[in-house]
Image (cartoon, rainbow, N blue to C red; front, side, top):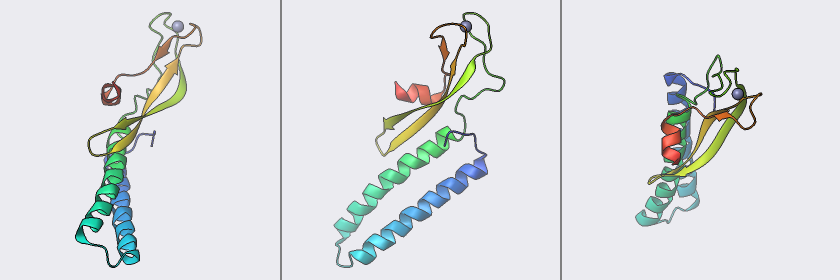
Amino acid sequence: MAHKQTAAERKAEFMAAAAQMYEQLEAWYAAHPDASFGEIEAEARRRRRELMGSTLATLINGRDTGYQAPPPKCAQCGQVMGFEGYRRWGVSGLEGDTTLARAYYVCPQCQGQTFFPPGPEAAAAE
Ligand SMILES: [Zn+2]
């Protein structure tokens, strides 16, 4: 998700992902009725990691991707910069893997003059 979402939209996205995780566990357990507690826990742990990763992406990306309207001006020449899209990158956290997104601007005048709005995502990627 690269576009900005309201808190209610982010919550709905999380609730849908959590519900999907539970349904996947139900389906897995139905297919493995003789699974031990440890095997069930291992499956739940794997899916929890996926859910944690997507939850953090929803929480962070949906709040602020650095997109600015009107767009920022070039620090070098002062011309309005062009929005080039969203740059995405993966962050491997302790509890999950998350794909973060950040708006990316380029000056049409200056060669290679770019702007990547600072934010929690930028800090997380370093
Ligand atoms: Zn410029």
